[in-house]
Length: 94
Image (cartoon, rainbow, N blue to C red; front, side, top):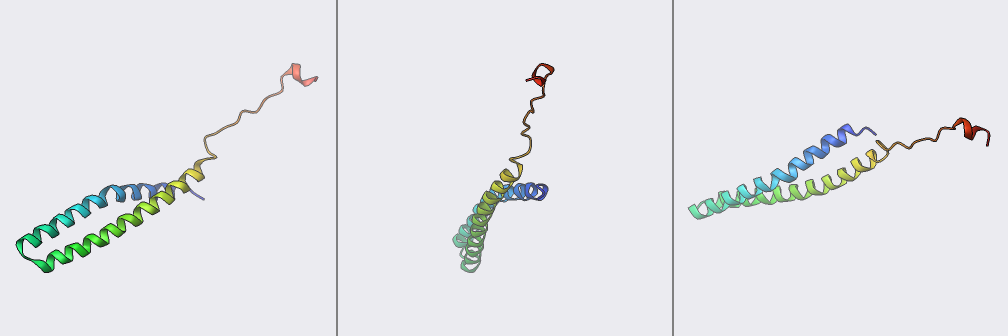
């Protein structure tokens, strides 16, 4: 299993986890502004869009958690080298 696509997926997931709450806040703020102006239909559309963004954020959070575990499992064997004991001439006779 190659880890490059996993790492790329992890980076995309982290970006989604950071950026989606910002988009969610802007969408809810826009919905409140539209409701204050009196455009109830557009405010409702923004609220429904915000609901979809919130669900998407939850899915991204769960997927990033799983991908983080996969990256950790695929990389756990790398980088750890065990030293092999070489026989010294004095140990060869024992």
